[in-house]
Image (tube, rainbow, N blue to C red; front, side, top):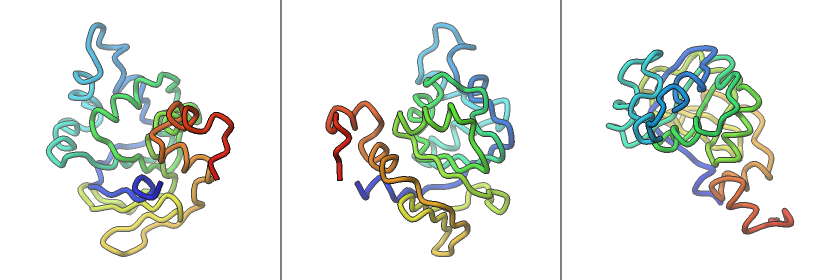
Length: 170
């Protein structure tokens, strides 16, 4: 489990009220697959962000308030996996998106993001609730519950339930 509980990557900044239904959903690009949408995700908010993330081999999205607000489609998490987004750090999340992210094995971390800079190297320790940069703790928050950590470590809810149909993973 520990390899997915420690995540690192460069920060890629977005703002407040990021509605993933608009910015990374193939609903608005009929006939386009997830890979295509991933190449153009978030263009309206941060032009070139998808290619910058790709050039780094992945990274961590950092947003303000209400990331994923009004997002009920799981496609957004599939697009972010295709983009190689390792985690999303935001001040707050839309609850449906938060749950979809966990169910699909995408780590989410809720904390103050106001001091994080574009390109800053971040380290997340999900089990301890720590966000660090170059060995310096930036934020400490409540760690995710062990059940959520277990789901994330398995890559999502479906793989978790296939291995632990009775939720007995301790």
